[in-house]
Length: 105
Image 1 (cartoon, rainbow, N blue to C red):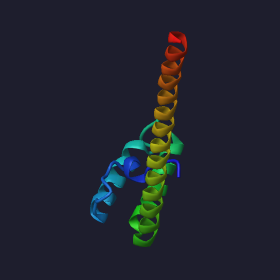
Image 2: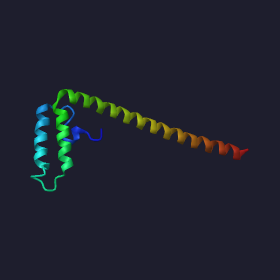
Image 3: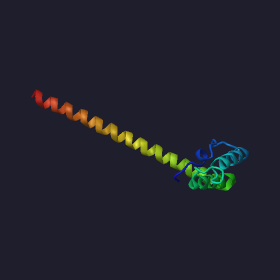
Image 4: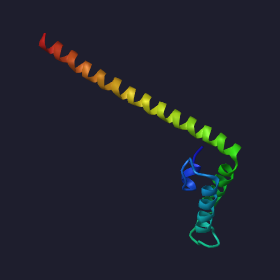
């Protein structure tokens, strides 16, 4: 998944169907190419896809599951990166300590 549909529609993940519909109609009018000459066709397509997904309860449940899994994976990658940085730092300090011991001898 590349885009967060909740962010595209400017609603919270706990938004009701009525809130999603209201936001979609507001944004569709705002970005529609006939009404907004600077509007991008890709943006209205993303709006439509987000609305089609979030208005259907089954599609929304699958999407929420995928979004939660992506967030878990991102958290795991961040944790692994932090651990790798900590290991490198500890290794550097360990090397410096050993170097100091060698110079004293």
